[in-house]
Length: 270
Length: 102
Image 1 (cartoon, chains in turn yellow, red):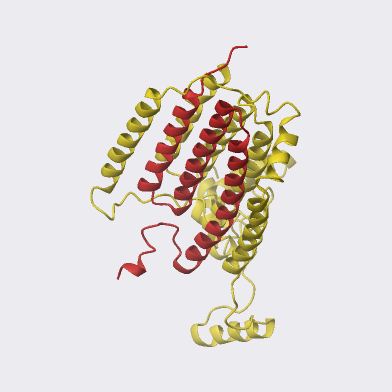
Image 2 (cartoon, chains in turn brown, yellow):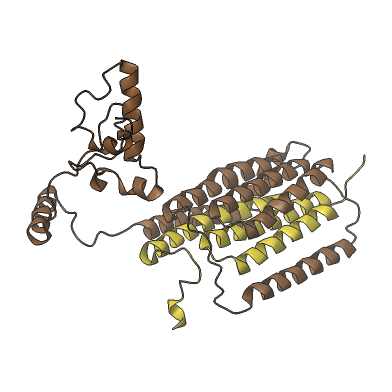
C-alpha cells in the first residue's frame, strides 16, 4: 500500500498537468509519468505481465508514436485559447468536477468486502495463468485481436500514404525553371554565396561581407537569421584584432581593403 | 495475511478518468485530446486490474490486456488520421476540422 500512497499523488499531479501545460510535448512527458506510475501499481497489484506490457506497449510504442507525430506536426503547435463554443470550457470543468465528485463519493460509499487476492490464481505464475485463460476462454477474442491489428496496420498505411499527383521534377526541369526565373524576375540562377571565411570563423552562422562592407543576407541560412544566432560584423572585427595580437602581426598591415567593416570600430584608435 | 483494500485504487482510477474526460473536453490540440483518451483508457485498466485482485480472478487482467491491444491499434489509426488532417489543413486543432458543420 505504501507504493500506492507514494505514487498516486505524483500520478494525479502529472495528469492534472496534462490539462494545463501549453506544449503538447510536455503533455506527452507528463503522460509518461502517469504510465510509469501505472506500471508500478500493476506490479503491486500482482500483475507483473501487465506491468511489462504497460511499459513496452504504452511507453515504448504508443508514446513514441505520439512523439513522432508531434515532431512531424510541429513541436510548437501549441493550443489556441479561443473558445468556439461560448462557455464550453467552464461547463466542461464544472461537469468534470461533478463527475469526479460523484465517482469518488460513490466508490467511497461502496464496501468492496474482503479482498480475495491473486495468490491462488497466480499459484503457477502470473504469465502461465494468463496464458491458460487467454488460450481457452478468451481464444476467440484473441484471434479477433489479430485481425484488428492487421486492419489497423493496413489502415494506418493507407491513411499516411500520400499519392503524388504530378511527376517529380527532374534536374532538367529544375534548371529550366531557374533560367525561367532569371529571364522573368532577374533572380540569380547560380549558387547562393557561401558563408564568410575569416580568421576565426568560417561556420555557417558567419555572413560573408559584400564589397561595401555590409553582411550579405543571402550567405546565411534563413533559419539562422530567424533564430537571431547570426554573428554580427563588429563581433568579427573584435576577433580579427585578437587574432592579430596572437600571431604578432603588425596592427594594420594590409587589411584596409579586406575588412572594411572593421574600420569604423578601429577608427578612434588609429 | 494482511490484505489491502482495493477502494483507493478504484478512487485513483476514477480521478484519472475524470481528468482525462475534462482534458478531452477542454483541450484544442488533437494530439493532446488523444493523449487524454489514452489517460481514460489507462484509468479503466487500473480499475480492471484492481477488481481482478479484489475477486481473485484473472479475467480482469486479460480484459486489461485486450484494452491495451485495442488502444495500440486505435492510436496507430488515430495518429494517421491526425497526420492526414494536418497535411491537408496545416492545423492540428480540433476546431478547424469543421467542414461537415456547414
